Structure formats: C-alpha cells, structure tokens
Length: 225
Image (cartoon, rainbow, N blue to C red; front, top):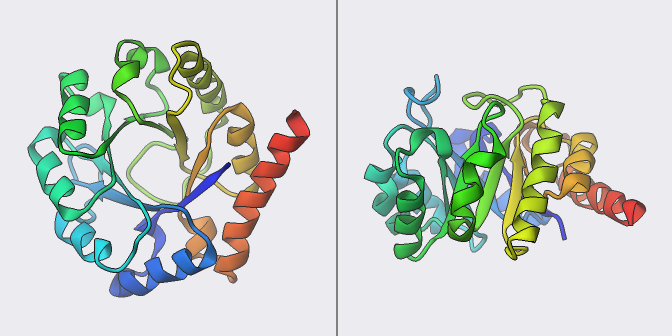
C-alpha cells in the first residue's frame, strides 16, 4: 500500500492546524514536517514547538525530516514534541549508527535521508538500525523543485538491499517533485511513501490530489505484476 505524506512546507503557515486537518480529511496517511536550519540547507523553517502544536491537532503519524547540522543535539526535543518518525541526513551525521540508535532509544522510528548525490551504499552497514529511508529526489532546501529521475536506480537498489538483508518492512519514502506521474515511477521502483507538497497544497481540489497520488501509484503496482 502506498502511503501519502503531505509536506506542510507548501501549506499556509498562518493556519497550519487547519491545513493539517484538510489533508487528514482528504485521506493522507502521514504528516511530513520539514525542519531547516539555514546551515545544512539555505533556508530556515520551523522547530520542535510547531511539531508539538501539530501533535495536538492530528492523530496521524508525524514524520519529521531534520535538514539540520548536528541533529543529535535536537533529537530529544523533537521526540518530546510528539514526532513519530525522526529522519536525519546521512550527510549531517558523523556517527550515523549511534544517531539512529539514539532515535530508537527515545521510542521513535529512525529514518535516514539521502541527498541526490549520496550513494545508497553508505547505508549498507546500518540496515538493521533503519525504519525509514527518505530518498531526496531534489536537492533539499526549497519546495517546488523538479524531480531528478537519476534517483530511480537508487530506490530500486535500496529496496533490493533491504529485502536481501531480511528487512522488508523498512519504508522507502521519496521527497521532491512528487506528483501523480513521478509517484508512479518511484513506487514501481520500490518506494511506499510519497512526500508531496505543492502537488497537494497548491491543488484546486486537495481531496482529488491525495486520491490521485494513491490510486495512480497503486495502479502502476498492479500493472507491473
């Protein structure tokens, strides 16, 4: 089953609670929260207090994507705020296995994100410590960018890597330029979580946008079997 995780980066920040309620009512499965520090990426967004506020208005899993330097300093804050998944960047972690273990010790699911130029091979020795891999299909930092199809082989390789290691329950999420067309491509390669910002929040009909992402990607699965 394909899970839809709207990114609130494209939502109206003046009424985030309502924006989360809208996508929840439309059938979204997770809420994706992009945290940027202006250092690891050239933009600044939100922090743990906003995650805490969102936790109070939704029952959906909150998937927090930390696009920040020194993420270990803030893991406990985001855990206490109510995150369900905490995803750190491989490129920002000096000791990735330690960081992932720390996230799990806080009672949260551990995720690791890979920038477009980062090889999936960097995860081979931490497969057992991962609950989610977030494949960036754009360079992180801004919404509305064009999907980079060079990541398709990476998704395929990751799914094979986890399956062969006996970790078939690990989620592979894709973030960047996701719409009903690119969603088909990544699901066909083994992704099961679609992070979408503009495609959902800028749509004339949010309900239809969420439905299209889910149904069209699942049609692709059926057609490929």
